[in-house]
Image 1 (cartoon, rainbow, N blue to C red):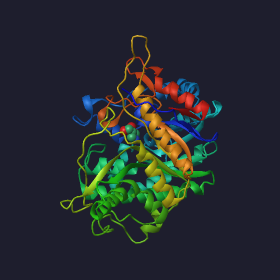
Image 2 (cartoon, rainbow, N blue to C red):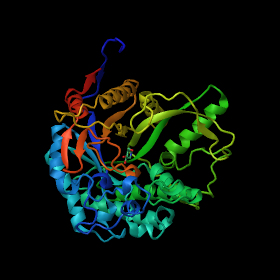
Image 3 (cartoon, rainbow, N blue to C red):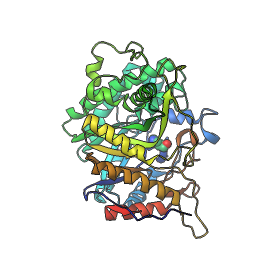
Image 4 (cartoon, rainbow, N blue to C red):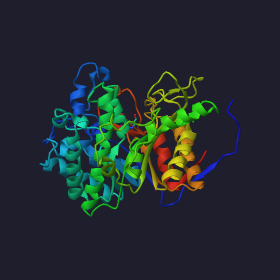
Length: 452
Ligand code: IFM
């Protein structure tokens, strides 16, 4: 029997920014239309054995052709803001500075449509779809890619910065470097730990260079990056477990934030961080330092960690414990991780925070009435969003929350297996149907909070 308890009212300030997030490759489709070039994900999806059922983002949600309907959907959901990403191979196909006007025009029209609907555009410059032409030259393991990204960032802000004032540079730099170059689960599918570590440094250089270039345009009011973060709790009170958990926190959560804010790498390695191994050259740490205006936190889960004497690098492993509640992705549901990470980041950096991604994969399908009663997602969101309110009550300057995702979409190496949307997408017909969680979120926005 469910526990009986009094309802809790969760409230947010009226000017709190409520949004949803998506990414170019996951929703746009039109993979080779209007001058768009091949991206590393187009190539990866065509490499046998890399993506479930060899699925691709060729069509995805066909958002490239349906963006007007999708903005109408956002309006129906009463979103205040929309976080999307700009595709580098669509706008600068060869990765150099020759613009593809049709590609730029797509984002320009999307931005106009959003503004006309009273929805604030909040774009990310890079959400993992590198032009394949740059991968041929070494991708993020080539220092020259940082220079190319600096140009790209400048050019995009020059072109769209008359209407867009808030920008994100990267989405989850830790994920696309480690999954792309260390364990090969993501494009470009490389498994070379030393290359991966050098790539992390080159991405840090690119982040600093892009931030300065974007500010040079004089068109940016706020910039930051959306960092992947997760909660990390020591498995015991022992000093060894605490220190191991701290190293893990530094590596997974701060590897791209600490360089940006303070021009240094976190002490994540047993025995200290070896700058030579990262390929750091004289002057680099001044380049990576380019303090942001806000910090974006993407958070889904958390875990307990303990000292691992067998691991010569971070000296840490996830503690074995009884499995708790999980989403259909297998990620543990740990709402308090969102509060704990926000408070830690707020206390350490004292910068405005946006939760730039949070959400869950649950495979709910339409019932006989065509409705999608995804109660588990509603319950997940209630508990996580309540933790955001708790952090605000405790003094953290959290300005907004972006739910992942506006609609079901292409979930990388899992293809279309995982559905994160608050809108159901029938990928055969491209019909969109708002799920129960979507209507719930609409009411949260309308009421600046909820009871649960
Ligand atoms: O779909 C991804 C997104 O591209 C980046 N953050 C996590 C989401 C869910 O896995």
